[in-house]
Figure 1 (tube, helix red, strand yellow):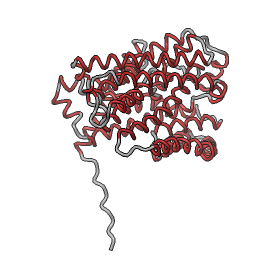
Figure 2: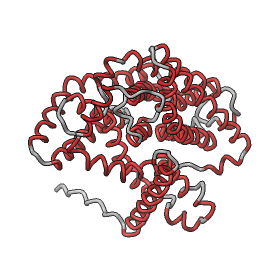
Figure 3: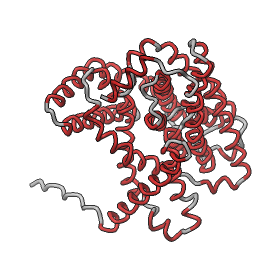
Figure 4: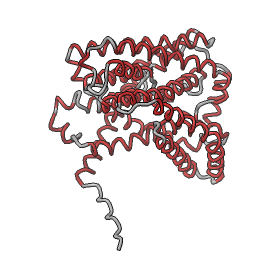
Length: 434
């Protein structure tokens, strides 16, 4: 006789209470600091990232240990509840980014985006690798030697954060502009290559690295592209056509969320990042030609106002700025930050000029791509888990990710003001608002 497995126990009353208070605290502080950031002419994402820092071990922990210990207990399962909410938000945010990508522009100016992506990837990668050999040995984790540590640092500073960039561009109303489209396209190039490099470096840090491991990662990317073109395009178009015919915005919202989540699950099953699947799904929705933007306004508002702030605030919780009291750690942070910013700006600007873009367009691309955000945090967490980074080195990489995200919006706004709005951009803005 085969007995059915016992159903999982429900969430405990105390765990549920802590989760709800955590959610309310993060969302409330993120809302207040986000509003404060907008008053200071910065996107709300700046304040939302800072919300986690305020509530985390950098500020609330030292000032009020008892409250911090109750609100954010040292229980991974408790924090994973917040992570689940934030992950849904970031997947939908990245999906919206893909939906707003003008594929016609990407085809017409693909050469420029490729040059910008290559420059913004290779130059910071090289500088980060060089800086890795100059940092103190105390920052190198026990699971890696100096070359692997240096290469990992290069990967950490060469990535760009599509979630942060997407939210910045959406809040600044720049996704309909050619420069916004180029920033997202170049960031997508950087991130696809960056995740592949991360897979290779992670394999080098482990015990069984082979060329086959790197080949599998590249093969998985090719599988995603082939499946998206052969199977994804017709499926997405048919699903959206069905949803639009229902004349109920709720049906369209449910279908789009389902498509984005399934695509994210597909890439994750191939050992790639879920955000890659969400972004590809957004591209397929844009490519379908089915008019869904108007029916997705409510979903977009909820994602931007609730889910995304929770995600960014949760990312800030993992920062511990108290480690910067050590002079060696502070000096390493300043050095890595300097070369990370210079590398991205120089690489993107050089690529833009080679791609026959203007001076201000090159500066805008450098400013936008400099935001590393939570992607940098994720890379740092991988390095810490593999033993490539010590806790101090992890803090340095996370600090670079956050500071570059804070620098990007004002620099991008300054450069974009000097780029004229074209008639095509005005028409594209009208089409997206319909």
